[in-house]
Length: 231
Image 1 (cartoon, rainbow, N blue to C red):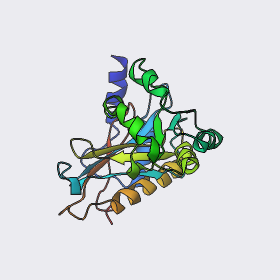
Image 2: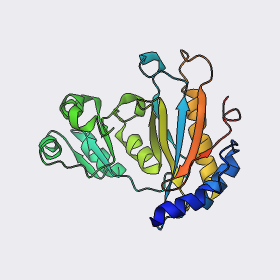
Image 3: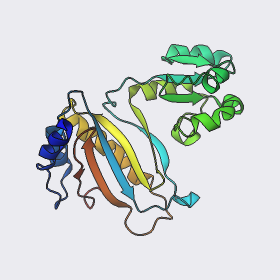
Image 4: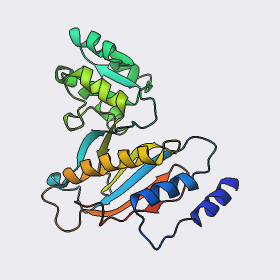
């Protein structure tokens, strides 16, 4: 298998016994990305949280200074003046109750992020079973349930990403594309890590950042020095 051979060659460039500094890790991730498309650079953060406890949950959002390199489609649920406001801000799709059957019955998911004004959450709540599993349910902590739809849409379009613990207490987030400069990826990474450190639940005892791995979509993982990332 061609991709398997390419991956094996790339993996040889990564020393599994050491934890890299950020700059070295980024350079290595760019070097080991060999796919024919512009791969996404992802960060996987294993935390010391126990997500089964509500007080150890982590969920939030941060605007990456250089964006993610991906054009994000935004759907806004609103009514009245907020519909025009969302459209003016650059939302791709705007509407209300009439969108429910399209999503629920026709399986329409041509959007990446859903924003809703608080007065629409009763309507959006009916989509919980379909939006929830896809991670698309609007949430106040992520800034996607808000009356300020202009800010919400503009932040998302500018490169706002959401971070949250998965079932294994790991956070998976994109920080850009391999076509980004090393400086752009470093800026984005630092912005993310600062936000994660700030979001550390006070209930977490011991080491918060257990491991941080950076990789391109098809490339091998590169482990970072977590001691230097903690603050």
